[in-house]
Image (cartoon, rainbow, N blue to C red; front, side, top):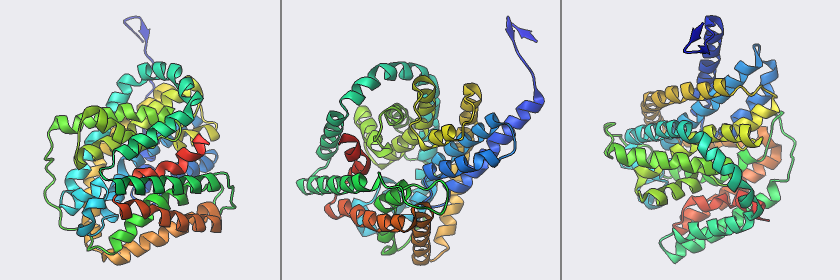
Length: 410
């Protein structure tokens, strides 16, 4: 039928199939997001290997793949907060989200994360096209001077530290992780699964295992207070919007992590505090999916693991359907984070935290072996030692992103 000169096609069967595909992706992303140590890129590579075997039209498989990735990016905050909680005496060196959990504000942190992610995705939808237009003109200049950009970024991160001891620790962590990345990234080890890679054990060792080991010495997750958000809507939405724009940097500039972009977003908004960081980082991680999709269509480059998997599976590029799947998955993720997160906290509190921590560490070792064989297990161990350097000096863990930045710079 024609509406105001525009032909509208009504196909209930195709619409129902698309909804089914998206919600299948949401269910898969929910399950994977709640598994500690399973990175969204690892999920994407597994889905890419399984995509040819999935019955159904390829464009619906692509919609399910993106929906799974977006949902995972919402839900992975839950095991991060609930399992990696160190002792209260170590709160100064804990991650911002963990400090909220230690103060009994974990349920609030879940809702701050959900709001930050939701605001960021909405912002990315509105600004996706103009930001892509700018990025197409700026990106070649950044690539041509990538070494200078990396050096400036490292200087900025070190300057953010409050003491010279922390700066020294940050520089040491950057150098050690950079050396590890330079040696390990070119490796192509034998793996059990067909889509193995070394990034999974590297990131699990640098950012996951040290936090878990600190949590083992702690007292577990304390009693959590009510879910009321203490910050004003503006204090949460502002970092979420800034995190969305920073997510564009993650999508277009290789090597820029979500944590680095979140710090930049907080600098731009003059926001501070653990809640602002949680909102900004959540916004970066989810908005990155939207901007990366625009980048794929505009520049032909896949800059996220989900889109690399999308291209590897040779799935059709149907922008309206893919954007709709992201929007639906974002709405579902924003609801699922507090609903499932509260139950996740109760389950963790009901379990012996030391046994649970050991079980998660064993899971990280198993995943490292599955994705990179014994080389992955060795990389996990080395990365865990290096990952313990920043908190020993009172520095932020973001300096460990040298694992990607140094290989890019050289």
